[in-house]
Image 1 (spheres, rainbow, N blue to C red):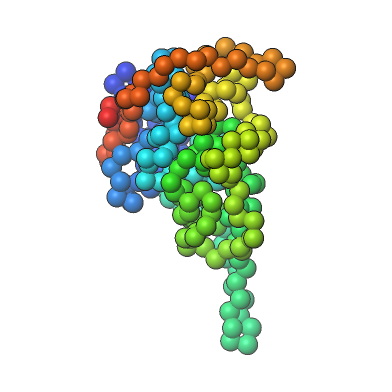
Image 2 (image 1 turned 180 degrees about the horizontal axis):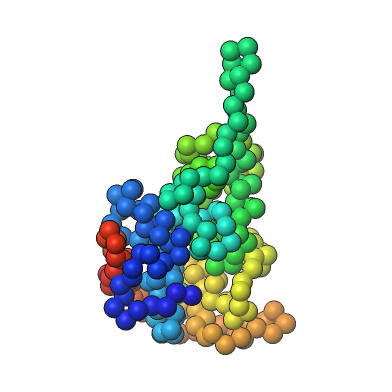
Length: 247
């Protein structure tokens, strides 16, 4: 977890490689703002954490796109091709004047083999983002959650079963996929699923507590009213500093 300074101002050099690359990628794409949960949510403020978790589905729904790091197991790995060149090099063989190149693995296969696919917290990204920008060692892929109409700079294999994220209307399918994912803390089991509960059952459903409340796969959901107009912090990108601004 990144410690949030009171000034909400960060030196880029002090940030993990993936976050620094995400800022650089947004600059190159011409975007002025970016939302990063580690920086835009004060993890030491339980009230703020509760408010932001309860509206994560809205954050992803209204974002232009979500940047996805498919490589590495932590935020220190970086986004391939942004600050550091990709390690994979395409092999091209010419035979009788015709060039042959080995294609990249299908995007769906890369997703299933990634840490992003196995993490419980990232399910809501795949469900509610309008578009996702996947950064891999093979290239960059731009697609909607169904993986239909993929745009990429890579030559890749195509698979018939590219739709890997269930529809948001398929609540039990979403729940089934979520239960197969991993979380670092048992206390996050309901918190990481709150966005789905909010989107499915309305704003009166959430689970704010950090204390473990699960026993024998049973849980009690506390019902309360949620403010609909909750402020969101976004990062305003500058050349050397990044500011967190209340929108």
